[in-house]
Each structure stands twice: as structure tokens, then as C-alpha cells.
Length: 198
Image (cartoon, rainbow, N blue to C red; front, top):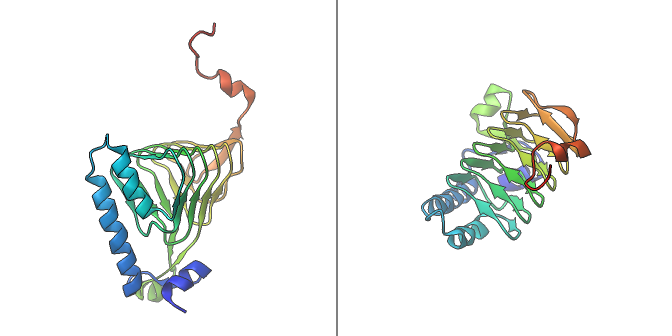
């Protein structure tokens, strides 16, 4: 079994000293570098590069620079996806974003988890646990999402949160570690004033 096959199956794998993995990471790093050099207003050229990076990509995508991703092909992005400055995807495992996902600046999604045993860790062994983000999710500024986490549809993750466990749909969740604060209700439509309404 190759190291990539071990990673996909959820086993410890050699992420640091395997030539095939380093070739994949180097390819994606070069594409990210190329993406980050494109004029920010040229979304068409940016999206051409993103289509080479992401495994699958929907329509109406906007990613602000800088952006970094480890493998790219392990990440799936739905329609109407927006990632603000300094989004990082450590996608040794699958990262799946639904439709209408909004990501604020300085967010990290990391599937990588190094071995707890020092000897295994020094051998370069780690595990890659998938991340799934549902539809209509807003991730606040500076959020870290760890591997093995699912975030349900319509949920808001508050700024600065560290998401270590799955979060259900239709809630606001905040904190370190991130916990459900409350459900999102119809009253939330009245939180901000709308022009023309008294």
C-alpha cells in the first residue's frame, strides 16, 4: 500500500519523507504561488489556476490572496464559495465545502494530525482526518478547524474559535474549544437594519 493510499484509508502514513507526496505538495505549492501573483481584480485568471488546484470546484468562486493549500486535489468547493485573505487548507485528507460557504480572513482548515508517539512522529508519520463544511456556512475571522470535524448547514462559527469537534446545523458556535452558543432563529433576521424598513 502506498503512503497516499494509507492516508486515504485513515492510517498513519509517511507525510514527510515520501517522494510521491512531496511531488504532489510541490506541484500544489507552485500553483498556489502562481495564483498569489495574479492581479487581484483578475478573477478569471485566478479561477483558471484554482481549477488546477481543487479536486472539484463549483461556480462563482472568489478566493483572496494569499491562499495556500497542500495537495489541492483533496479539496472540493461548492458553488458561491468565498475565502478571504490568508486561507490555508492542509488537505492531506479530504476537505469538502458545500455551497454558499463564506470564510473570513486568517482561517486554517487542517486535516493533519501528527503521531502522539515521539518515535512515530520523528519517522514522519501522521494521519489525515477529513473535514466537511455544509451549505450556507459562515466561518468567522481567525478560525481553526481540525481534522475529523463536520460543520452542519446554515451554521456560523464565531471569530477566533478552534473547532475540535463536529458542530450541528443551524447554530452559532464559538470559543476555544468551539461550542454551540445557541440556535439561529427567525429573530436573527432582525439583528441588522435593512434599508427601507422602519
